[in-house]
Image 1 (tube, one colour):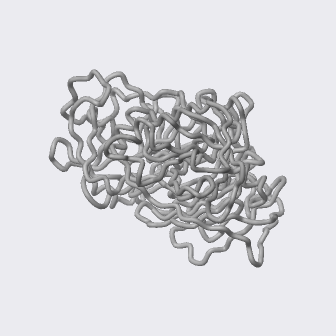
Image 2 (cartoon, rainbow, N blue to C red; image 1 turned 120 degrees about the horizontal axis):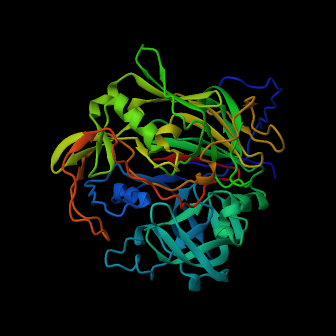
Image 3 (tube, rainbow, N blue to C red; image 1 turned 60 degrees about the vertical axis):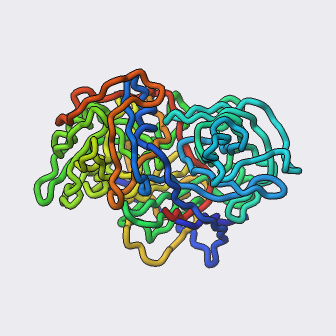
Length: 496
């Protein structure tokens, strides 16, 4: 069935090929909400991702502005309502159970989001005990693979395979929509959620478009199987995704240059010898993550101070009013990110309100991610069938929707043109990987607090007590991540 499934809630060189626009008079849509959920201690979760031997605890107080994207669905017969975190950086879908060590705590952290009980479902079938996923932020899900009936946004998937986590460290499960090559931990591949939607006839093409909207917007959109031309400025241009050892695992392309412009001054380019870099476009990351040397150069230019206690860059919150931009180039496709999108939550260090978190951090030499600060400013289309990503500058005043269906075969994305001579070979491709990193997303609202102390499980007994300019001793990251990807054709507008 020809359809675009909509889940509602919240550039330079190219080939001059003819473009076919697939516009339906009455597109078939199915909708459901994707909402914002508060999380606890997101900065400590990022420290866990960095895998440092000695870290200090970061206590985030009044975390109303800290959130992840989540959706509501049902599992089983009769239906059991469950909330899942949407994750483009993994492939498995898994749910919590009420009896796990984490969920059975006195505070019942999983109760607001629902848990799964297979004994109450007449359509449940056990498969194996092979679920064992460890995510980049330290979260683990271990248990069984099963099949059951799953419903999201009017789409019903019978005998859908997913994981049941009898051990987990998160209050909600995950709807993983990455490449199916990673489903089952890459061992026993199966048709995960996006592919299952195609198989069930709800969607046509394994492609989707992402529009997060600006920092303080209450609504964004992920549109699987279609493109909303009102959501971007200019034209979409496409570059190939980078493979790892001949296999596509992650939504990654080549970052070929980066420049800074301060007001009317001439833009200055960073001449890092590391370009081109393979980078993953990851909506699960609150931060843009760059190699140490490149991050240090940016910190120096913007007078960002590295706080060794928090392991983050801090800068005056007033910097968000500067007319400064960082421009990211991908074989000539340019996306501008204003500094206002990089000034995140205000923090207090040892009780004194000081500065704001900076939206760029370091990832050692291996990890490069274009997280939410970048993706909020880009309209990105991921064509998994053709292993391409199309980009354009996001339009924050889009007006009426104009949705076109993504077709099949070559040049399937409507309105997109191919970048000629795009970079496909990069220095850090062997280490490229994505991770789900959750953290603060807004600068307005209550002030967070940084306090010194030992992180749970850490043997550290002391912490730095001052900030220093630059990144003289940047923390490095572990390269062991669940690789990213996304497939399927389902449109989803995200309410934050």
